[in-house]
Length: 195
Image 1: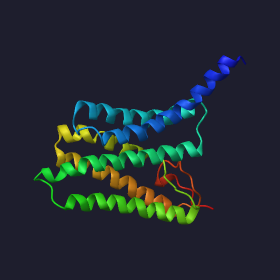
Image 2: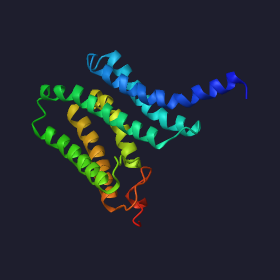
Image 3: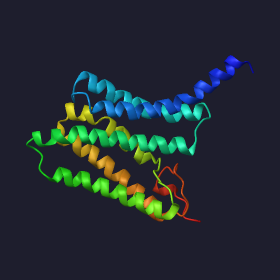
């Protein structure tokens, strides 16, 4: 194989990782941009696009690895944390919200942390599953700014909370009942209960 072709193949193999790493940088940039502006939403959309694209690119280029999947999941959590940091200060400005909003956010976070702790205890690694409900919750969360602008803060938040809680609770159940770690399990109905 000619050197230039080999070089091109090597560069293509790096694309998925570059998309994932760009999500860390883009997420950090959201902290520096005024929320709800055109530039903010442009950067936000890039975070979502990079999340959607990195997995299929890795599979298409046959560069998918466990490390890449773990890095993708960590980038997702990082993005979600940044979005919370950006949007939570906007919540008290809306008179429709009380402290219960923080309780609901806490319920999702605690459910995830318990699942992570159980998974780490059972498998000695971060479990971070790629279930359909986690992907659906990610899509709903990605649409949060749209819900925020179209439906209002309260309705938009409740839609996102419902999706996030269902996916967190399913991940908790899968972690508790599965015997073997399968990060690509699609749902609670497809877990491996045999060791």
